[in-house]
Image (cartoon, rainbow, N blue to C red; front, side, top):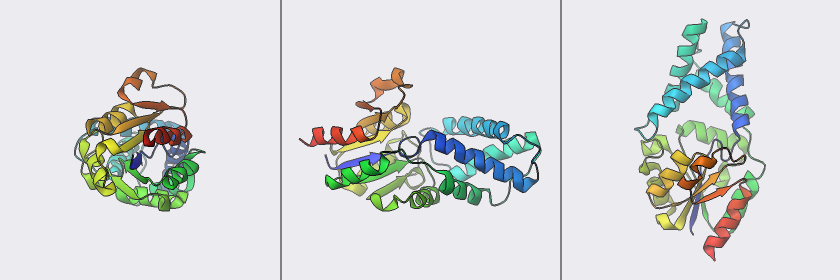
Amino acid sequence: MKAVFFDFVGTLITKPGENRTHLNIIKEVLRRSGRRDLDPRAVWEEYEKESSAIFKELTGKPYVKIREVDTDALRRVAERYGFTVPDDFWNISLEMHARYGELFPDAVETLKALKELGLHVGIVTDSDNDYIEHHLKALGIYGLFDSITTSEEAGFYKPHPRPFQLALEKAGAKPEEALYVGDNPSKDCVGAKRVGMLSVLLDPTGERRELWDNCDFVVSNLRDVIEIVKGLKD
């Protein structure tokens, strides 16, 4: 075992933190538009539905910048509710992600422990380059990664093989020498296994139990990844 790669949203940072971030993005957009009369949570829920639908269509396909997807989704909602999307919407998004992003409690200790084992520790994520760099630096963990591979760089969304292959190239590792940790069985486990990597599903509540067969390992916390790696190295 030479390398361990991680997904980002839902794997290193929590979904509740991401939801809080998006809600605050909407609050700031509505404040800028002078629409304090609108319910931010209702607008946020509509925005989430729109962006989720677009991303579902993009799964495994050639990359489209997330800033474009998010802006398009919010503009659709804005037309229905009658407010304006600020020209600097993406800057608002980056700032709110930096301010409200929340790491899993055991994320830092897990990353450090894997590095102490002499492993290449990387990220493979469906994101724009500026988003992931900005967010990791704000969280104070940018320096813990030996490589960062985005779908923007690879040109395709997961589970397309290219993001995983590019990450392996950066690590100088063969597929069978690498482990990938994510929270989405269909994108993370399937994508990793397609190129020959072992896959770990992070499923703290067991809500994805019906899809566990897509993954080689299932854990309820990141700390368990350390023991998996130790077992594979022995």
